[in-house]
Amino acid sequence: MTAPATLVQLLEPWSHLYSDSKVLPTIVVFGHIAALVFAGGLAVTMDRATLRAARGSAELRTRQLEDLATAHRFVISGLVLSAVTGVLLFTADVETYFTSRIFWTKATMIVLLLANGYAMTRAEHRIRSSPQAADSTWRRLRWTARVSLVLWFAIAFAGAALANAG
Image 1: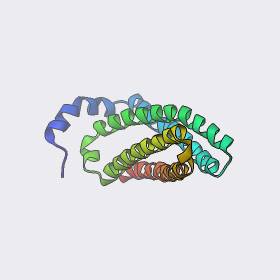
Image 2: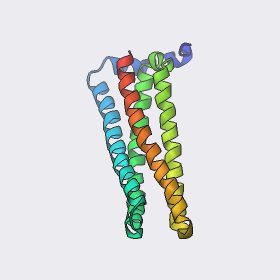
Image 3: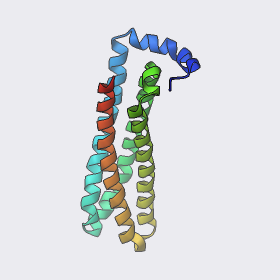
């Protein structure tokens, strides 16, 4: 399987600009890694706190829910920057990435991470709106925190593999 010729041709000006510059790749790669470190670091920290709070007091759980609501805005912002820079990296070398199983595996894991984040925020909202269902919903929240941890590290691993695959 190869990248469609029309896509390669359409992206050729960007690809040349990117490959002919030393500054542009540095900025794009830095933006990509910094966004992942920021969003992933915050998410991992919050996931660990969620796992701890799930076994804690009602007060600790309430505080964690408040912290999660705030943190999600920052994690989403980091993911958006990561997605934008990821698209820039993809389009700079579409012929390589279009056929890369590692790239598509990483992209799939990012979609799974977003779906898990959606499930996590739904569980948070359910706990806030239905305190009587809190214990079962906290189990779901704990599960989504574990999935999040696995996905963040798997995505980092895939990114390292992708960087070294070429």
